[in-house]
Image (cartoon, rainbow, N blue to C red; front, side, top):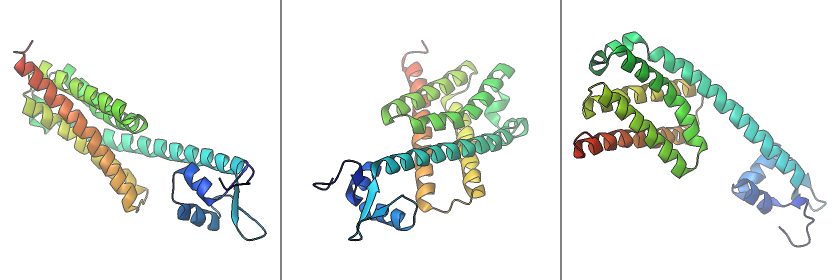
Length: 212
């Protein structure tokens, strides 16, 4: 904060540090009236701390609400894709009894909710939860007599549903930002890669342990 400036007033650099963005971004937001700003007699931009903090809370609320709506839309689209007709076309699915089929259908629908949790957790906890999902997929596959390749193929089917559902929602929402698309693709890749590794590691551990 600039020397001699009261604690309740912030300059461009102070706000940039508070929001975690570049000062030029703060300047643009202020000039576009997206961020509450005041001008000194000399024409300098000044920001009231309470107003900036309130703005931050409103932005987080809008982001959370928007993410929830998009997730619900994606879940609805995913349910349509995980139909009995789609699944019956899969060789691995025809090997399953009704109990295993129900477990796989449920796990496919839960992938989207897992992705939302993954984004909210810190990196280490997110990886642990994703790996745990992979272990669950492996256990369902092993109980059903699927090979590691068949279990991985089953997971890839649901991963494709997750990706297609998310892409569909982004396209429907007319999201054109390459940054937003890139970030979404990276998160899905990180999440599903960790699940797949957990699945394969579980199969490997049982093979090395003689199935115990």
